[in-house]
Structures are given as C-alpha cells and as structure tokens.
Picture 1: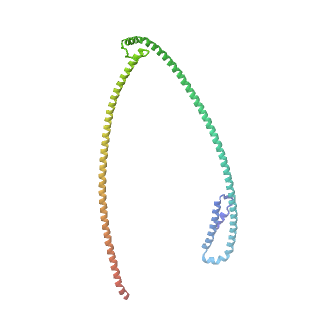
Picture 2 (picture 1 turned 90 degrees about the horizontal axis):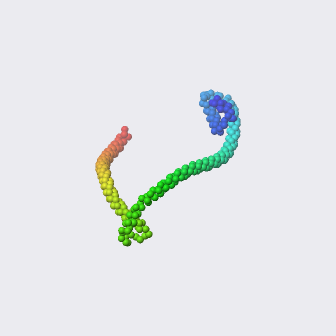
Picture 3 (picture 1 turned 180 degrees about the vertical axis):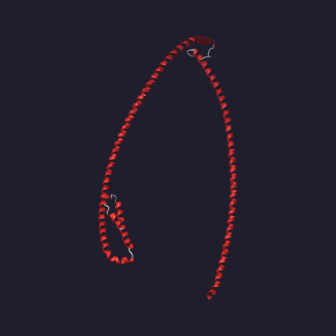
Length: 311
C-alpha cells in the first residue's frame, strides 16, 4: 500500500490534461489510503497490535497530515486545471463560431462562384446550341433550295406534259362537241360552256357509281367483320365457360375437403370433450377418495390421542 501511494503521488500534474483523469487519480488516492489503513490493521497480529499501537500512532498522524497537505495541493491544482479547461473551452467555442462564420462566408462565395460558372456554362452551351441550330437551319435551307430547284424543274416538265396532253385531248373536245349537238334540249344545265356541263355530268355519274360501289364493298367488309367478331366472341365465351367450369369444379373439390375437415374437427372436438369429461370425473372421484382418507386419518388420530397421553 505504501508503494502504491508513493507511485501515484510522484506523478506530476502537469502531464495530466483531462479533468476526468485527475478525478480518477483522487479516487485512487482515497481508495489507497483506505487500503493502507485496512491492511495495517489486518496484517498485524492481535498481540503485536496492542504492543506497537502506542509507538506507531505519532507516525501515522504525521503521515496523515502530510497526505492531507498533498491532497489540498492536488485539489488546488485540480481547481486551476478546471478553470483553465473552462477558459480553453470558451476560447474553443468562440473560435468554433468564428470558423463557422468563415465557413459560411466561404460557402456563400463558393456557391456564388459555382452559380457564375454554371451560368457561363449554360451561356456557352446555349451559344453552341444556337450555332449548331443555325448550321442545321443553313443545311436545311440549302436542302430546301435544292428541293425547290428540283420541284421547279418537275413543274416545268409537268407543264410541258400538260401542253402535250392538251394537244392530245383536243380530239376528245371535238367528240364532246358532237355529243352536245346530238343531246336533246334541256338535258344539260345552262352554263357558259356546254363542254364543262357534260364533263360535270359525267363526273357526277362517275362519283355516284363509285359511292355505290364503295357502299357495297363497305357492307361486305362489315358483314365479314361481324361474322369474324361473332366467331371470336363465341370462341372466347366458350373458353370462359370452360374456365368457369374448371374453377367451379376446383371450388367444389375444395368445399368437399373443407366439409371433410369440418366433420373431422367436430369429431375431434367431441372426442376431446368426452375425454375431458371422463378425466374430470376421475379427478373428482380421486379427490373424494383422498378427502375420505384424510377424514379417516383425522378420526384415527383423534381416537389415539387419549391413549398416547396415558402412556
């Protein structure tokens, strides 16, 4: 115990930087002092303790005073360390706040710079997109110019073909004029050009014929489509009926299994109730038999008590 006291007290408090370590050292000192007192009392024999108590009492009081002085110094240094720790914590808090403010400013500057960079990047991308778009538009315009030149040449060719067609169809005009001369009066509508009236009449009759033909074809297509839809509907409904029948059969089988399980469970419940009833009857009989035995034993003891006292 003396060695354990001398080693911690020889440590310098300047090497201790944490208040929790100082409190642990003080607790260790108090425990060591208690250990010293208990070991001094336990190591000595009872006879030697009565003889040497008078001689060791001054030495123990001196050591206790010295330890108390050392403890007071340790308490003062501990208080100084605590004040120093508190001042350091306040300085650290203020520095932390200053650093946080500086970090916020730096973060704001970085965000502004990032926004500036992003804006410049967006402007550059827009400019590049505009350039690419203008290049594409230029290419499209050039293609349109080439296409228009091709269209112009096609129109010239068509114009030449139309002129040739007009020259070729002049004989038909002569034929139509002959037809007009043959037609009776009032058959055609009055107009400036009888040729155009004949052509309009022909176009009307042709359109009527085409309309009637289209109606007949549409009706035939509708009939075929209706027949196909009817066949598809019949097939789909047949498949649905088969599916419903299979599901109904599965449900019937499931119902039969459930009914069988229900019957089995009811039988099991009835069997358990009968077993429990028998067990209750048996327990009741056993309880009555035990109660009768207890009463008989009590009656036997009461009868034997006078003979025992006489003996």
